[in-house]
Image (cartoon, rainbow, N blue to C red; front, side):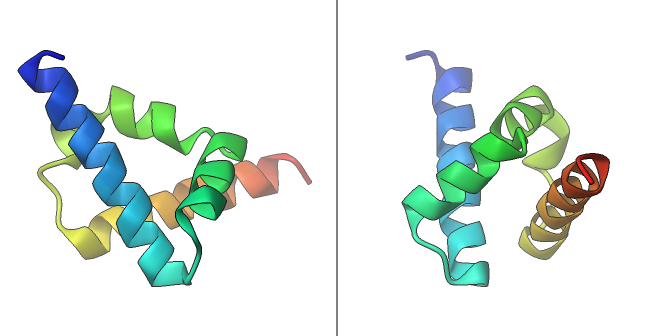
Length: 74
């Protein structure tokens, strides 16, 4: 795995773990939620900007992304 790919993998893992802690979800539950609302591709595609942001902002960004997807399916 190249350095950037490894950095992205660590970042995605961090996001899954921290989102789970914030919302009291297991890793599997977070991955399922992220798959349903296409969070992982968003995080990967926007890694360069997102990985420079703070934890709280990042968690809010993910919450907002999920909310937008939920509203779009109603």
